Structures are given as C-alpha cells and as structure tokens.
Length: 105
Image 1 (cartoon, one colour):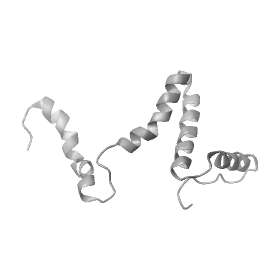
Image 2 (cartoon, rainbow, N blue to C red):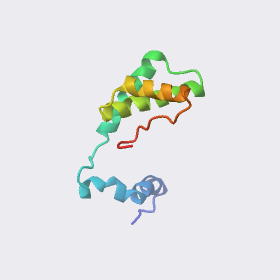
Image 3 (cartoon, rainbow, N blue to C red):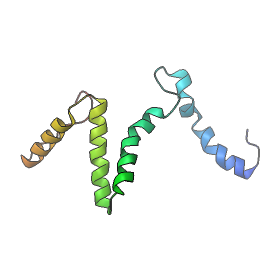
Image 4 (cartoon, rainbow, N blue to C red):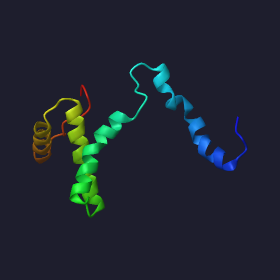
C-alpha cells in the first residue's frame, strides 16, 4: 500500500486516511469536486483584510470574523443583512435570545 519512502508516506498518509471524504463528489449527488464556492465565499474577507491591514488584536479579529460570517450566511440565505443585525442588536439590548442564523430555525 505504501512505498516505504518516509517523505511520501508522510504526505500520502493523511490523503489515504481521508480518501472517502476526498472522493465524496463521485458518489454523492450535489457535492462539488472543487472548493470554488468556499474560495468565493472567502474572497470578500481577504479583500477587506488587504485593504484595511487587518486588525490589531485577537478581540478585533474575532469581531471581524463574526460579522463577516453573519454577512456571508445572510447573503447565502437571501436574508436582509442589516435587518438581521438590527434584530440581533435589539435582542441584545432587550436581554432576549439572539435570532438564529440556522436555516429553518
């Protein structure tokens, strides 16, 4: 199964361990063979980071991470981003549970 070459085994071992996941697109309808959708979803965050020079703290990074996740999730669900953010902020100040981003929740 393995060649015995330690460098090759080190590289191929994880690929072999995850082979069922790597080839899921062959057997499961609707699974894309590329990560193009993920790359496209990350693009706005990468551009933002490049133009703004990122954040200066872990807390700032966490805030940006959260807001960009909310924006992308709302976009994918065709939800009003500002409406969701408004509801979230109002719920926070009213000490109510925050609205869910899960589909159908």
